Length: 296
Image 1: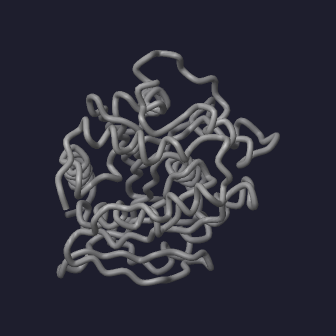
Image 2: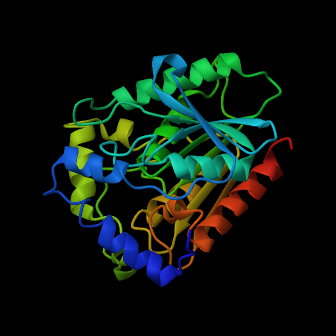
């Protein structure tokens, strides 16, 4: 697979994804287009279908060594598009970088299944995996974009209860406030992937007339009791302000949050792992950060 420069990868994202992720394109067409995309799988990738908690998922491992961690991964796509198929390569690179068995969850999507269907599916899958995972095996809850919002909301709901909480939380370009006003700083409109109009349509599909507090877990919520949390954004990511605001608020509540912004990169550039060296570097950083807070 050819290695891409940052300018070439930006152009590719703008020409391949951006024209499809806009309000005028029907949801089925968006889903089919996104599902057909995907980068190279790491050598030694193995996948199998499963259904933790009754929710369809893809179980992914990479390499000959037995994984030492369990990761529940929630894909992005505005709660409307995306699947374990479209994000299989990214999930596999996550598995390789973090020495984890990764469960890429096919939670129910809007508009057919609005809030809280995706959240319920995530909770059901997490509880089932937690029941099956030995206490000395670290469990990680991970999500990108809309999946990041699901991951944070789930982690907040698991605090202080009888159910096992995640040992670490990973948020990649998280979408944490779907109903907020959009920033107008020019740098965020350099994002080659996302349009504010498409995001607004997705938010309306996910939660028509929904409760803002339920949709925006970082806004006004008590963020105490979170596990060690890793947040990554690109500086051109239109959702970068949400990542930065969350990291600042969570630290005020005593959470250990590592927030990294990668210069001149865009929304979930990490999905280009295996093609874009900057994406490989970000996942390598993610692995090192988890090594620092979890048993090795």
